[in-house]
Amino acid sequence: ISSFVYRRRRPFHPARLGKLLADGLPASVLRSKGMMWVASRPTQSGVWSTTQGTRELRGGSLWWAAVDEEKWPEGLLADMKAAGLWDDKFGDRQQEVVVIGQDMDQKTMEDLLDTCLVTPDEFEKGQQHWDNLEDALPAWDVDEGQFAHQH
Image (cartoon, rainbow, N blue to C red; front, side, top):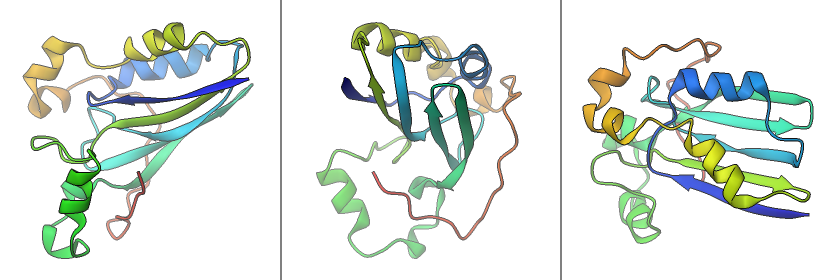
């Protein structure tokens, strides 16, 4: 049994992510769990959780970058920057999913997840473009008071 943390600073394309979840992860993946950034949902993180045969994708907390800085705990920005968790353009938005598997090839799994990201071309087009991407993922509940995700 092995595991790795999938981290990327590009958002998932909602249609590509939806297809991957509908098709299912490879049988070698026993469990995966974490938070994700979906391009068409810029204010709220997604919670990703799978086991063999089950998949859950739901809304998580708001990204700190989407919360008025007056509501941030003191020192948060400095702490996130020091930990490498802050990007000057996109804030704390990122992919951070732990993948656990048996006889799993990490590179193959990373490549599979990478195919779900927006392409470099799409990434350069930015949020205005991403807001118009096909998004058939289930709707997420939004709790405006929910802004304390952990990295």
